[in-house]
Image 1 (cartoon, rainbow, N blue to C red):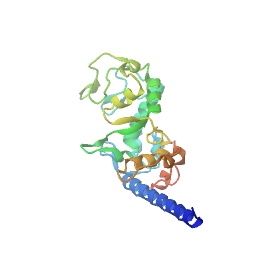
Image 2: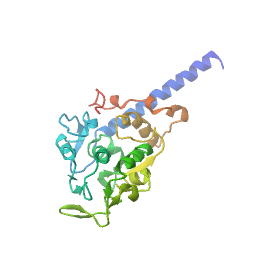
Image 3: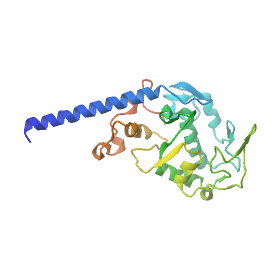
Image 4: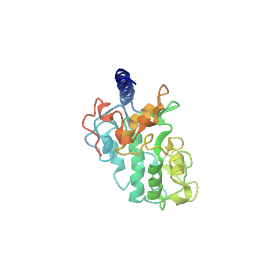
Length: 249
């Protein structure tokens, strides 16, 4: 290959990388101005300075700061759902439950998976298998009487009530994947790819560009482009018009 041809190929690669980054930027910006339509969701994300929990999303939050007061330990009830319906959750188990609730209520990116039939919820958000395994390990000795927390309880004006015996999480769920894909119905799906799933912590801003790119039907990443997730092609810090100071843990 001649030097001229080699330079041409290099410029093509640079051009494609820039175009790809621009497409990711446009997609993320369009989603970043939308929230789900639940009781505690804002119309669009904005900074919150008074969050008691969920501070991961404080720079650009879909929930108001006062909502997070519901998640101050020990958590007994969030809206119409008692978390302690069998017993008070252990600290470790409660931490993972908070991660799920914070993501649902406060993350500025949940609209990407908005359920078209129920815009207050989402569908098939990709969680990392390793996250799910850690979640079950933290909760394995805690008790629950429902496998699907959306459908298996009896709900009335006082909240949720057991219809079955309380058993350990470790008995209710066969593994971490079963936990993630059962507790909240079809809200989550488990992925074994570290580049295409969420950990519900500060690492998500490095994985999200890959996830958004993967879900774009007009393009796909080659193995060489995927690489390690910590070398994400576009930082979400620069995708958010409201977040230019990084994510607070």
